[in-house]
Image (tube, rainbow, N blue to C red; front, side, top):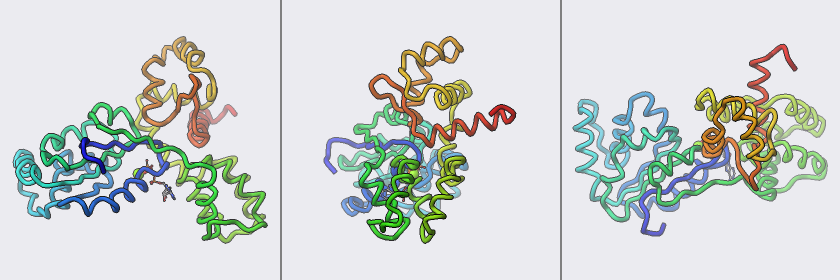
Length: 300
Ligand SMILES: Nc1ncnc2c1ncn2[C@@H]1O[C@H](COP(=O)(O)OP(=O)(O)OP(=O)(O)O)[C@@H](O)[C@H]1O
Ligand SMILES: [Mg+2]
């Protein structure tokens, strides 16, 4: 890692491979630090015990400080300041979904060693900007070759397919749209199944998103305010691929404040804006449609 920055942010939609990437990075660079820790689920730890619980995890995993239960929040803050400030430290904070979870740690200005680093992983780019990350890396969908390889590795335990499945593989890849989570879930399901079963599975997938994928993606939707949920559902059902100004005019007429809502959905990796058009990953669109069908079961 180059010196000259302290905070690296990694962001992208659910299941795109942020944790996978950060884990590889951590394995490659952690030996260069005097102490390091990878906190996997910051939002959950914060939800259960607040910022003090996250600070305790950092202390116990980096400097092996274990007898912390009797300490007050201010004592913990003092230990963080006294024990961490002068060591070369690497802290990875994965699954951050609110700025408070990192702000309240009060860690950034404590790490005074010039080569200490914090890596923050989130689905929400705004958190990284608001925290002042020096470098923000956007994880992108796999390319077609990587997606093909991953599918073969999951479905056949090899990088290549056999001819029986030659026609079916593009169908699966078209469905999974280069999202590693979907390729892994569906590829593993298809492992050791015959061509007839592959076809039947594809037919099923066209009607419903597998639960394992749905649950991961739904977290992003559930974290939205009501108005932004509405905007997400409108885009999923009607406006995918449409021009941003056209969609904004319609949403505005519905009183949904698209000027804030559309950028917010993009920051949260639920849509992307390319050439002034609004795009949405097909699986997120499927999620949106499923939610709408659930809200209006009587209307097709
Ligand atoms: N480059 C890759 N090669 C092979 N498999 C990958 C790759 N990237 C991701 N995967 C697989 O895709 C799945 C989802 O990846 P990962 O958990 O890293 O996503 P994420 O972006 O951290 O998602 P979330 O926002 O839910 O935390 C994992 O099972 C992982 O093994
Ligand atoms: Mg992750």
